[in-house]
Image 1 (cartoon, rainbow, N blue to C red):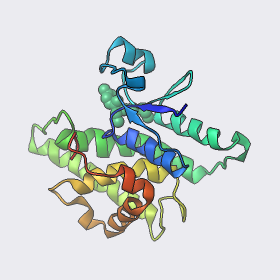
Image 2: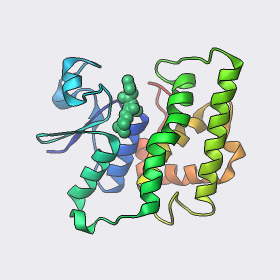
Image 3: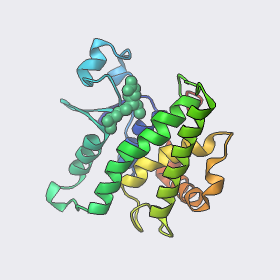
Image 4: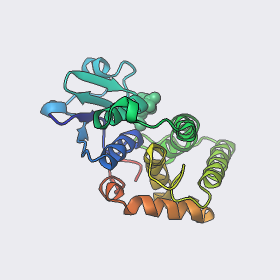
Length: 211
Ligand SMILES: N[C@@H](CCC(=O)N[C@@H](CS)C(=O)NCC(=O)O)C(=O)O
């Protein structure tokens, strides 16, 4: 039976898992109704899948796997035995940074506040300037890491790209400010990600949230 990803299609982390899965050849359905049974947000049924009441959660047969990285690693192991999976310290570093610092600064402290399903507008100009400065500084670091490479950690698409793509995609879609105009290498990188078959399927505009 095809695994199912519990989580709304607009969530950045759901999108990342689905990009990663699709790059590995698996078209992973997602939603909040596994087996056609809707599960209410933070209901007992949700907490039974994810103890912190978050998404994504992978439902794979009898398994329930939460945490984006654990889900992606599980999908990798389904495709190849663990001993054949390469360990790359640079990729590991960026996977960790993207899931923590970058996600916090670009998504939690900025995107969700300005364009999330439950917007939380900045209360003061200082608060907004601080969040925007963090976005700018983070984009500068990402631009440096990308350099002249095609993908974040080298010539091939990898998990770091699947994690970063939804964040840049949502940032670029904001009507104002046009964040990526200051970062042409990141803009071209995002375009490369959008042009891949996985990007064409997942990095699409949504009217549900985050625009
Ligand atoms: N460490 C978790 C973070 C999960 C997470 O923050 N998910 C967001 C959606 S992208 C969420 O469920 N937010 C709602 C909430 O925390 O209440 C992971 O890597 O999967």
